[in-house]
Amino acid sequence: MTRLDPTLRLAIVALAFSGPAVAADTVVLFDPFAYETPESIQIDTSGSMYVSLAMTGEVRRIDEDGTQETLAFLPIRPDVVP
Image 1 (tube, rainbow, N blue to C red):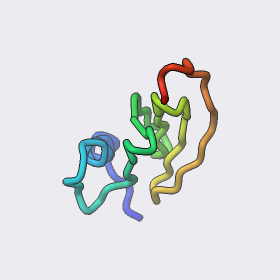
Image 2 (cartoon, rainbow, N blue to C red; image 1 turned 30 degrees about the vertical axis):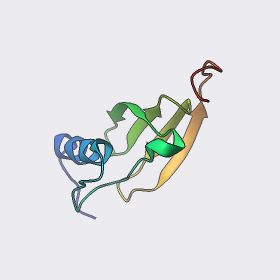
Image 3 (cartoon, one colour; image 1 turned 180 degrees about the vertical axis):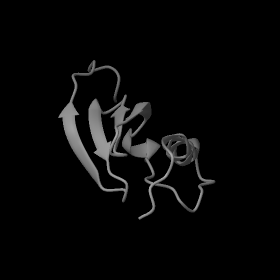
Image 4 (cartoon, rainbow, N blue to C red; image 1 turned 90 degrees about the vertical axis):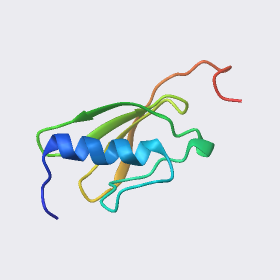
């Protein structure tokens, strides 16, 4: 896979968060009906992205090929998710 400039990668991921109109090079899609609501994105020097999901309390690592791994579950208030 070709390495992308981190700014471009962030823009591609932002497109994935924006809804049904998605770019062909989308790294990963999130499902708001499964409470996957991205809150924050960080990109490390190897190109992996770290995304926090506000409604599930997850922190996920997303590799360049789109592979996801949950690294942590943060505590969330019980009244946040029905």
